[in-house]
Length: 394
Image 1 (cartoon, helix red, strand yellow):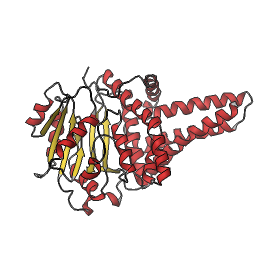
Image 2: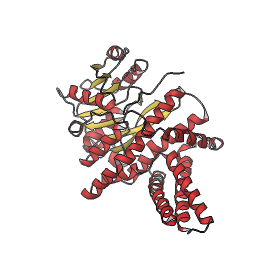
Image 3: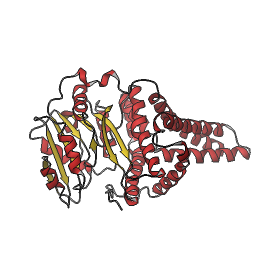
Image 4: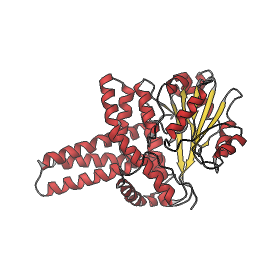
């Protein structure tokens, strides 16, 4: 009985390890990161664009974001800030920067999904052809918004820009954060794109044709509302394209409190999505033959890399201990394969994409990063739907 249980566990951890390996191998192939499908020069204009910037108490940094966006818009386009449950001067700062502002006050319904729903309701009076969503704390690279919107308009599908996070301060552990982010939001979606598959939505740097976006329900406080939105659209035949030529950038919080809160939201939200949404999407994709939805569901089955590494390591130790006392070797073989796939994928991704972020001497810091993540997972199930990240410099 123990032999069968360990064998099942080892086979189970092999599955996400295999998916991760396929994504990293595809991303590491020696090809141009932008396929011919993504060349916006092939298409005519995206029609009118409305950029929605959901903002909650962002008076300190929103001006730069709005300046980045406004410099890329045409006279026919709109820049809308949704000042959501703000208690500071976000709305006034946004108006002074030339943005259209819609203020929302509803303390019982907090979260980005509600703010986006409010913004779409505001735009319905004069809907644009394309909607771009940019977080209030992001910087937008020049020349990003128009081609991003152009691609979404021409393809009739959501389009996701490359979303980069950098550390506000120096330090080995903070560079580990950058590396983990790069693996999740650059390497893996790039691998999917090179396999001809869609990517997950990342919450900012997203462009949508108006009709598909207006048809879905955005009003929720889901911790990872962007992933849920991507699944909903994929189920309707509108899975997202990855467009890394467009670039948005943000920084991790400077304070330890902010870092921990942000990690809690991302990691626990991702884990809840894995448990709650991925099986449903997987079944629906299989039942309907929706290849794009199936691909996104399989991608969601890869847990956060720190959790995957910890689980693979624990399963391997259990299988090795069982083999030493006389149980079969098959569970140990499967666990070893899972370990090699995971370790090999992380090593290849680091060697191909991450050496500029984390040097060889910094690699031992990964252990400290893993232990901090374990403390976060202990709080799984004890967090509210919406969590505000502390962005103070303390």
